[in-house]
Length: 299
Image (cartoon, rainbow, N blue to C red):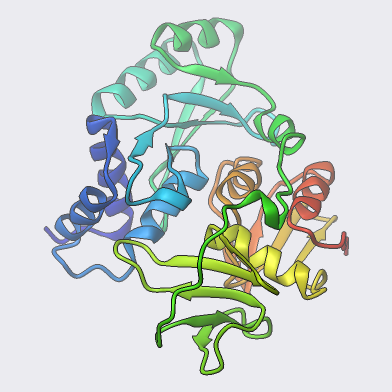
């Protein structure tokens, strides 16, 4: 089956919607089947894409033990006036039902293809009548989603995460604070964030003196930068066009990624070594920046 990347994301979303919940290994197998074993991206890339848009939820600390779960169908109000996006569980028949419902009430549903995400379903010109009709289809309505979520964003400290013993092995990699990549570490056990090969998904350990904590990769990277006093140049905000810029290849924690992404309803764009999150109001951008332990930089 020679599918475009867009189709892979779409079909993967349909498959998880049908299953309801999916173990990590089953998702990896699904990606292999959908790409004829010629996949250019890691299965985690597909998972993160679906999660940032609110289609699925998972626990990055226990990816091999806790199932990936489809989110309920939800109509999310973005930060752009008159723009809602439909996220969560979907099938072809369900989308057709929503489309018929929208057309009957004079609203609009636009399907926009994405390269690194499932098709974005944008609804506009909605009235109280259409909201009621959509709720009758089992769709939850979420107003001002990102604004509400931004007020709940965590800023976890190192001691939030569980202690763990540092394994003795030659394949440890250390997070480089300059390149933002992971490099082989010959002199083991200095302070920093370590990547350790593990079955299924890699293990990440944040070491600060004698203290060692098991952390998810995304939070670990920002904690490592903060511990080293690196709180600038990784996140900035362009006020003129409401764009939040995050340095590549840093990973945003899923809850923060979702908050930023659903301001526009579209996945971020990679431009000039920065991820660009569009249509992010300044108040939300500020809350996101502080949650990542970074200094506020508006340009």
